[in-house]
Structures are given as C-alpha cells and as structure tokens.
Length: 112
Length: 164
Image (cartoon, rainbow over all chains, first blue to last red; front, side, top):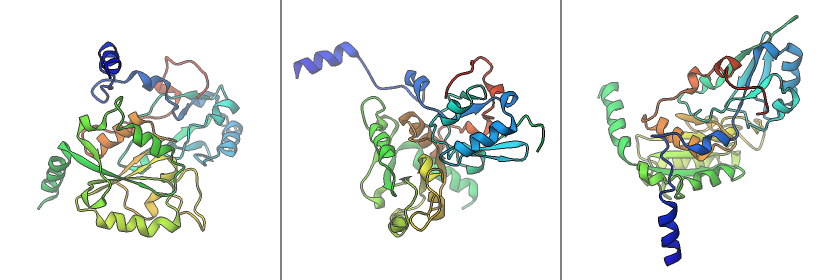
C-alpha cells in the first residue's frame, strides 16, 4: 500500500488531458490511410479496391471512392502501393453525418 | 416547443452528465476492450461527466458495437425502446458502420438497418481517444472535423511517403 502511494506520488497524474489538450499517444495510433492522387493510376486503384478486405475502396470511373467508415486500417493498401498510400494520422473521425465519411479520391487516369 | 428550444434543452441535459449503455451486437470484443479502457485511469471517462450504466432505462446514450446480427435485432430494438428520450445512438467501429460484414442471412451488416444512428465513430477498433472525441461530438461539446478532411496528400505536405 505504501509502495503504491509512493509510486503514485513519483509518477504524478497519468490521466490524459484530452480533449482539452492533445494526447501524446495519438501519434502512434493506427489510422486510415490517405492517398496521393499523382501516384494513383486507374490500375493501382483497381488493384487496391480488389485487395481491400472490408470493401472500403471501389473505383467509380475517375474517382476512387473511399469509405473511411468501413476502413479497418489494416495497411494492406499501403503494403501493395507504398508510393500511392500514406499514413493520414487522423483519428478524430466521429461524425453526425454518415455521408461525409465517404471520400472521393481523384484517379490519375489515362483511359476510363 | 420549437426546434431551437428542443436543441437547447438537449444541450442542457446532456452537457453536464450523461449515462452510457453499451450494446454488443456481435462484435469481436475489441471495441469493448477499448470502451472498457475509457474507465481506466489514463482516460478517466468520469472526469468529463460520462458514466456507464448497466440499465437501458437509466441511459441517455446507446453505444452500439458489432455488425448487428439478426438474432440480436429484436433485443437491440427493445433496448432502444426502453431508453427514456431524448436519446442518442452511437455506432462504434467498422463493423457497425457497414465495413467488415456483408448483409447476409446472419447479419444486418450495419447498425443503421435496425436503429436510428445519430453519431458514427469509425475505427477498427476506435481508440479510446477516438471514442472520447465521438462522445464529445455526440453531446455537441466537440466539433466534427472529418467533413473537411480530403484524405489526399494535399492536406499533409510535410509528411513523407511511407506505410499506413
């Protein structure tokens, strides 16, 4: 009991100040990816849509439709196309409107 | 009562203290682990005036996880009906948002199919910080940011290429 008390005094307050202040652990969270439109060809988009296990990606003509709500941040798209997919670092994704989670990424396309 | 009065009354009632009932509709329990962490000292949900309650009749907010399996739909509906109004339904995690599971004879695939969802929290699982932000959005204390995020590189010019 005394040991726990001393340990508590030494370490101070461990409780995060979030949301008043940013939390240090936020930088290491797994987050949904974001995309680099310059490196995203239609072939790459099709390939990413095919390997996405949760159906968060599909190509609609010249845009890659990206449902952030469905993304599980598994990282398979980043492993498949590391030059087109980067880490977003965004975790504050809660919304009152489901449709704003569906993002349209322009695809650098030759043919449709 | 006008819409503005109702909105103000909801903000007044939910702005101070709010009781949460969690509902697992067939999730893999990782969302539950993250929700449980909210009560741990590092996140300490109670400092913000949120409390967990085991009874839907005492709850203001229904935190739903999982893809809403069909066997659970009636129970979920009963839980929702048992809650006193005004009430908020929060769909938590990629399953609840229609990600992982398809619509098939076993699951509805998303919480929207059974309950009227007010707030969506993406993530697999959503981290405790994301859940805190989601709860803040649900009671109107925090603004939602995702509307303005394009999820293209233009937003992050300082970051180099790399894995997710």
